[in-house]
Image (cartoon, rainbow, N blue to C red; front, side):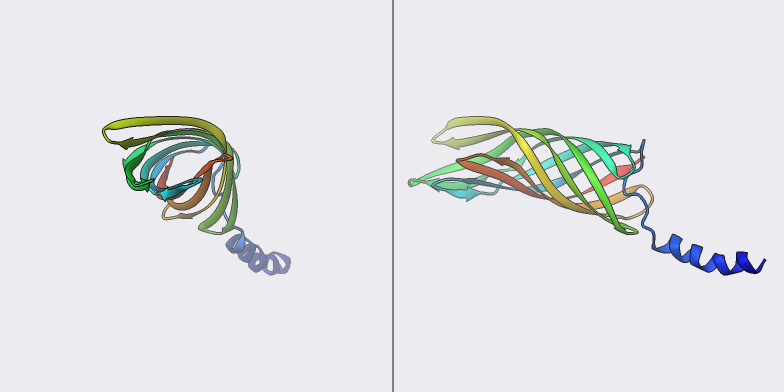
Length: 179
């Protein structure tokens, strides 16, 4: 009986300090957020449109998920190119990623993601529209906080496109529902 009492406190303390899994195997989540996009092109002022980005994820192992994303532009941004005002807008973004979570302390986790993104951007000037699309390897970092058993909030930075003449990244803030 004395041995059981002497082990009780250390086991309770270990349980309090061991972070829970951020995503469990077999868990599904759906969510979305507001993305502040940053489009940088050589010789052109940065454009900063916004986008709504939805996500659907599935835990393939504890703290590892596969995730699909689909987004569309909410607002455009106006930049001046050689004296011409040009509206820049995100038409759509879609991608598939592997997300690895590192629980820091219950309820906080950090994560990294890597995968492929398809995106379409349009620019409008003088009533003319120019569309450009691309696919690229993407990567990013983020943090989550569990707000309750079903809802978590997140903030992340993702480098969606990194080409020789331009790059596109986003800072996104949102929430996920886990079931």
